[in-house]
Image 1 (cartoon, rainbow, N blue to C red):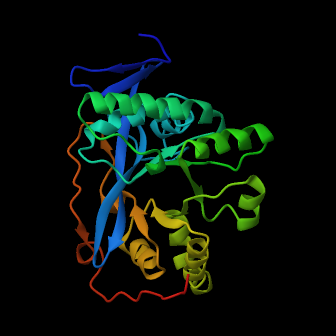
Image 2: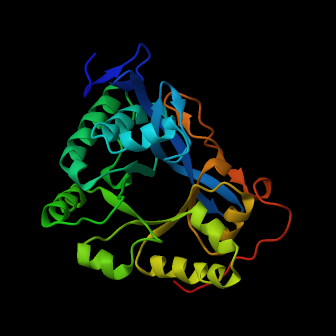
Length: 273
């Protein structure tokens, strides 16, 4: 086997080989708040190493550092798009880590993955369902053109809501569909009432710009409570379940908030969008 190739095993799960490691796809739930329950509406894709999902951060261990490096690997989005057929549902939101220089290859990867899905009598993934997570704003005219080409194909973008100000987005020519708020930053804000009070207005400002707000990497009930009370739309992270390797049976049943939050009332802040 050669590096730079994607293979399928005996049951159709796609994988690739990097050095002596076998890498594949895993998926974490993305849920949307409906009344008193979180309803799965999509997934966020990441990599596995030798069949195991790695839920680490750079510097925590060698496996996490390996995955972080491989997230920027050009074939990773194609791998996740091909393995999407094993989810058992067609996600409305499909989040991928994408760099600007991956952009020219992504529409073709989606086209080929959808052809694979059609051959298996699975529904194709609409381009607008694909949300390209950008690690940084485009820094050159070439990168801006590449992202504009993705948008022309119907793909959309997700950005770090804490990192990118509205002015910088406008200068980059981006109109993201999703603003993401990390659970780690939410946990930091909870420690300071003055900072926590700013969350609801921040969420409302993203909504005024037409964005869906996603709280990601949620690890505790307190982080979830804070996000719900601030008016966040969607949620992901280990609190909702571990990422599952492609081909696993994922639980797409609604998750009652009462089962995720401590027993005390919610106070949902109303801020006009």
